[in-house]
Length: 290
Image 1 (cartoon, helix red, strand yellow):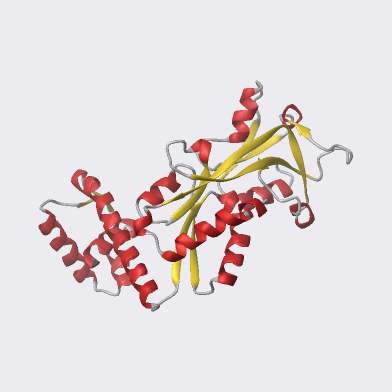
Image 2 (cartoon, rainbow, N blue to C red):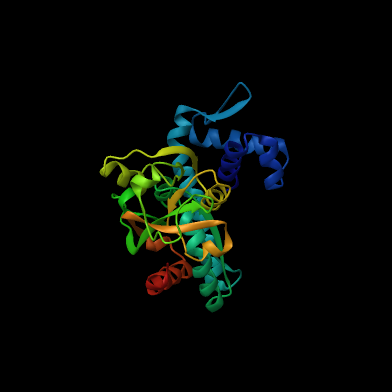
């Protein structure tokens, strides 16, 4: 598999030298691997233009199959290690940022308490990239918004309610128990982007409103910090406890904004026993999630 892994690293690192260092080979050895690979396949895969290494047109067609081959081989090794107890099992999870902050710490902690020989790798993505990560084998399973990925055969886990998060310096009376979307349009909006689909923006548009988007971020924690600094408000699923940890207020919106979270997984034939157990665990404890 080394020649395929070498190609993947060269593309990712944009350097044969860096790929060689990662794999523990010399630069000429990596170059020879790539030459042999192109001879075996029968056409050129790589081209170098203006100091940039890129795939040829033929290489772009075959590269997804090479990635799948690498990931399937890694899945084989993982299953072999699991059967022979030679190493800890690894579960690779792709998820939208808000889920990695809100659900995964509690789920993983409880699961590892019962299964201490299981490790996790978390890949943050969006509702577009997560299905691709699973299809390519880069992730075993993924959490996404079902409405944003209607073509995916995901299993419904839970409906989440999104809430408005505002800086405490906003002059909102303490007795106010909810904020209308019309009220929020007076302030700058810090949008947490988790793909092409946005539940909050859709809700604004449904009632004929247009928020003033001041900033777009792809990380939920960074978004909270921006709000805390008074740069604007955001709307996302959040624990009420965050009010105690940050200089913010959390209030329901009117109208209410919800989304359905689904769990997508790769072909069960390629799943490790640990990943299958984690999926069962998530479904069992879904009602306990915030």
